[in-house]
Length: 207
Image 1: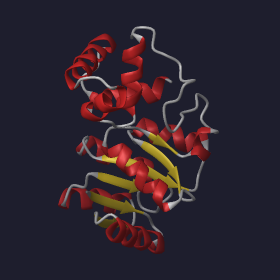
Image 2: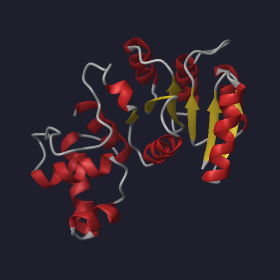
Image 3: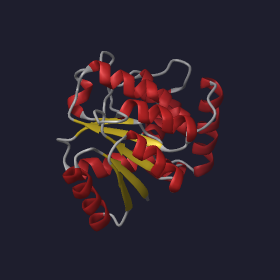
């Protein structure tokens, strides 16, 4: 996986780079602000960006907006110390796929990067307490169902939202891959969405 780590703190940039390259063998590049990040994307497009919020020259929210406009397929996770509602909503409106705190353990950051790669949206547990509608880290039994979908379709949608493939969902629910594939197609049609990524985004925004 190709990552870009954007932070004005050199120690944080270098520490994360060493961590990802040593533990996951991911190719990690670094940038010191949003403007630098945009240039790095133009040089070699990353798959996922870890983006700080408050940086000189160009902050993380504006950088997210600019990068998403030019490279909409790049996925961006905010990694910051701020839990203000204003920062969170601004980052999400700019197109970020996640919002994590720098206090998140290293394994938790890696786990959430993998989830975003598969199409999920991720939020730190410390963040959801400050978001009016609240966004849990994973589907659970208390998550409300979507009335337009059947019980089984709701179950499959929740698993799609965590990034599971059709094969993995089939194994988990003891269904055939064809059954899962048909169910995903039916869910897309009922919710008037285009693909699995939109399904994941729709799920996390509406639970």
